[in-house]
Image (cartoon, rainbow over all chains, first blue to last red; front, side):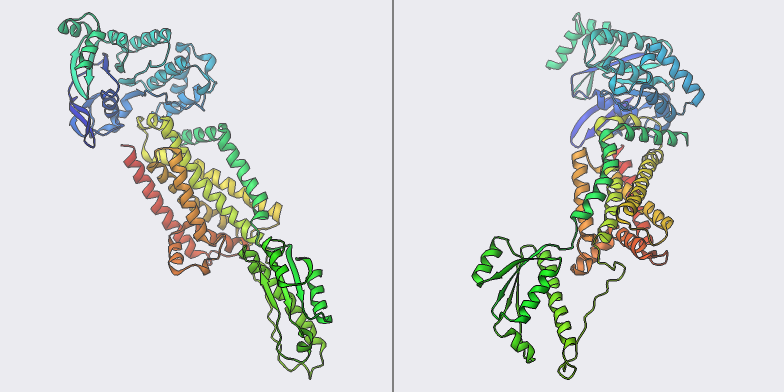
Length: 234
Length: 371
């Protein structure tokens, strides 16, 4: 990621951001609302075209090879965006098929993934009828069906209760341990501590990058929350 | 191919599970067919009529009797004065007043010029216009009878017979005109309205974003949306044809397969329009306004409710851009007149060109909005 920028008219949402993420890393994007986290993520997923700058994702160039990138990434948006009027299985079938997973393999993966989530009882339920915590886990599992190299999670735990959040992070760790790179945005400070490295954004700019411990030491405070409030106050 | 089939399956599952859409698709054609033709009827019945008779002769009595025996008129008696007539008309009690002058009968018999005054309440101009025609027809009929009863030497003036034969719609039954019009409205609504709302809804819910991060190809997405709505539109059209036969006994005079083929072309244009509108709208409300606006313009220009011949030149020219107008021509031609491929060739070419242009615009606009 080098000098990536997104302008909406005169407004610079993402201002020349530069960083690198290692394979299999859990990389956290931190920032207040409107800091540019989601915009940056949408550019990386190919939903928005960068105004300038270059980026290489999963070994492909963002500008010229977005089709290849799309095949190699998974994305879970801030707003729950699976189809509420399709059942759990139908949603997974739809997305698995769009990603080109072969029918036989897809069937096995759906079964395994539902078993893993403990969601077998919901398999034929309409997604709209299941609790939010389950929806989030389902969205995550669906984003992983095609075995992507990188998963982008945009505030995956907003609005769910602490227990589900904890479970969700267990799942993130488990996924990362299989070599999948996790790129996650959040505004929960405690979640930042779970990341291997974090990037703090404010007004579209990268303020700091490093491991949570490193950043705390550099600033001389004992929590990410303190780090964060320092930046936001500036 | 698997992707397309999956998308079609998804769309059908969603339509079947969406109670609002389901009822629109099922109830709309029923209501339109069962209600609309009876309300949008140009035929005038129950014309309220009153008379002022200054002559009080057997001729005027006979003419009045003609009116009262007609099923179209309701008599409100013989009035004493013009003032009374005006009063009744003001209160909408009567639609027409017929005033016979003094010596009406005498002048008539002596072959002198005579006249009678017909006053119409023109607040409802359609009723006034058509009513006037009825009123005159009754008089004309009476004059004919009178003339043929007279000895030939007295019948000096040549009689002019104005006889009306309405071709293709012999009973001048307005249902024949309105019902095919409803078919057009039905297909247009399914095509443009339902498609636009469907896609904008995905935009609002954010589900389209989830689709956009997948490696799905643009044409796959568009075809995956168009095929299901094309099928639904065709199904609605066929249901419409069946209702048209069952309820009104109107059968397609021409080739049904030709009609279906042209309907498919028209639907493709309308689906493209819906697609295009969904690209330029942010939410369902905006999409609804745009569709509604275009729909009204298309319908008014098309000549469904008013004949195009009476429109100013620029409006007639504007109709060359109106797909609904061409499709209406096709429906009228094939359904009512038994038109063949040769008869609707121009319309097919026009509709095909429009479909290509609109669909291209739709694809390009989707390309723009997805980045």
